[in-house]
Figure 1 (cartoon, one colour):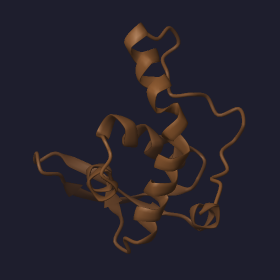
Figure 2 (figure 1 turned 90 degrees about the vertical axis):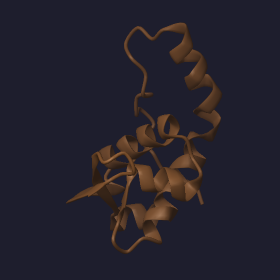
Figure 3 (figure 1 turned 120 degrees about the vertical axis):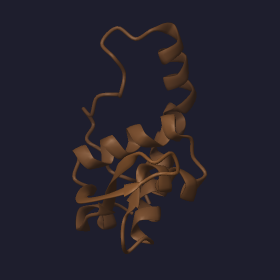
Length: 107
């Protein structure tokens, strides 16, 4: 299924991106929809939610590619911050995310 995102949703780039940021963005932009879908599917299958790190592990994704997709999905209401927190493997506290009804319909 197609994941609907607002047409005018801005890319996650800085106002004046460096050449390396543009190169990284161009290398992933074709895969962004797939990463969003995989993120939603992972959350759908996780009744207790997942942290960003857990999502990355679950979908075998890179943190620098997946976490911006989490931000995008949150911004459009497909996922929510549960207010629960869990520690990651480095001992850092992370937000636990959950899929919304809107997110389920997007799958």
